[in-house]
Image (tube, rainbow, N blue to C red; front, side):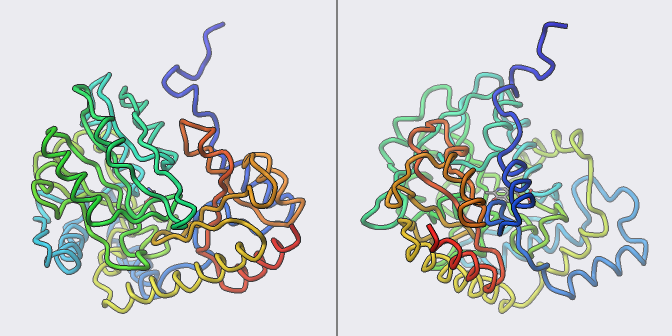
Length: 392
Ligand SMILES: *Cc1c(COP(=O)(O)O)cnc(C)c1O
């Protein structure tokens, strides 16, 4: 048995940093601004809807493979309500697939659409499941690095770098906007260029838009609503981030029938189905009035401002996010340049836990001096974290 147990595809991934940092938070009694989960649950009426479904025996046995019709209809109605003015709509019967969170939608899409050796372009730094799922699907990841612009206090996509990354082996672009961890919201111009490139080179696109309702300036523009994109794009959403129920693991993909069929082929052998009663509850959540969605955004914008202010006061260089619930900071003004060492020491030094952005990079050296803080926490917790960080 001298052969390693973990196979070569997964060997490089180890345990996620979130496990280590969350354990550190517990051990040191620190405020955990590492992993991105809200410290308050979503709307009471949505929780009640889940309880009702459980009690009434709806969803306690295997729901239909593509998702319950009520939820597929609600997802289609949500897309129509928010993006119909951009000409985007989906048929609930053939163009919507319910998944075990966005995570499964991403995994199933990659497993379904890639042949071994296909190249996948992803914006670096990237969400931690992307690299592992591309690897499990036998694909090759090709990072295109978002570059920090300290003047603008924001990250930028270099469209030339993106264009140069496309080769004859490129099968798809895996996009994420609003972007975790940098908080970047791709501009209409950037999305237009990405769409033009995808059409020109005949690429598929998987676009992870789980933060679609957390855009603080301007509006969210689904990539699928750009010319030539609907037919080649799998769009992914999730109830976890939009309704603050990250433990329910209800997500969805919308795409034309051929793409949905492909994704479903992989999905049916991953979980087959999941979250029966929660599917009924999320169907109700998606029909909440507009002021729920604007309220969520306004609430998180105010929280962003509290934490961003505190981090600046403490001496970090802050990249103020235009979306998501994460702030990326540069620790060099504090006299540090190794985010790993900084985050491992931070709980003892200041009683706060953060995540080193290097974990989200292939080019670790580029991400080394950056650290991510989550602000989906109560204003009191954020203020306390800000006060603690001033000790630095
Ligand atoms: C949280 C997150 C996900 C995972 O969503 P789930 O619905 O919990 O599986 C996917 N992509 C990004 C960018 C995220 O931040």
